[in-house]
Amino acid sequence: MKTTVTSIFFLTASLLHAGFEIKEMPGKHIDILNEGKVMARVMTAHDTASAESRHETYKVYTHVFDEAGKAPITKGAGGQFTHHRGIFLGWSKTRFDGKQVDSWHMKGCDQVYQKILRQEVGDDSASLTILIHWVAADGTAFIEEERTQVFRPAKGEGAYLQVNFDTVLKAPNAEVELNGDPEHAGCQFRPSNEVSKNKSAKYLFHEDTINPKKEKDLPWVALSFKLGDKAYFAQHMSHSSIPKGNTYSAYRDYGRFGAYFVKKIPKGDSLRLCYGYLVGAGEIPKRSYFAERYTAFAK
Image (cartoon, rainbow, N blue to C red; front, side, top):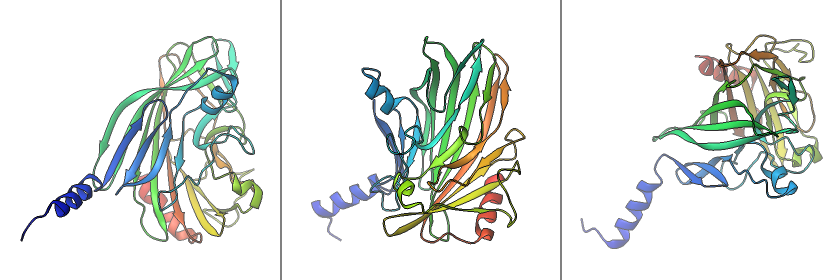
């Protein structure tokens, strides 16, 4: 068989886009691609040149893209509750060394991306570990975070992406207390700001009778929402190793949902947190599907 210049070009292109890739745009973001499509984008910019630029870049978070890789289905800066951004982490009452800052609304502190520590890609997954310093206004790094996110194609029922969010928070200089309330703390997911306008958010729990305002340590919660004429869903999973008292906020019609706990990290010690996110397009699956996905995640 004769090999032409054209066929060589297409072969090269297909090899370059086979499986997962990680591409960093320094000072902006890190893209996770699968077969050439952006699946997720880790926002790493930090610009304090003005109050406006700081507001745009004061925390590290992860955008989830639509199934075509064209645009985020999660919210960035601006809109209703500007501090809600994609998959994000923070506590409104973060205490250390006699001080209190707000790492949820980002008052008195910033989350500052430092560098990629590890990255690995294959045909069926990408793993990215980054170093983030949580820095107070006086320059003190009160938390050193190693955030690992593993991205995989999801299976069945319209799901197209699973993100395992496995992070280690270290208190390098003083004891840190992570505190707040279900509305303003923890690891949470915020869909596009469009959901705050169409009020389409609906929630599904692991049992029929769950009241998230009263019951704690739920294994998972699922969300359905609409963007334009398209339906999407997301599942938030908390590993059993999460500190007890883990409380879900999963009732707002704009779709911000997730879980928080209260915990102290002694000086020099670390706290590991493991969450999972499943994202799909189409009508929300039945409870049994999410239960199966949680079982697989929990292992």
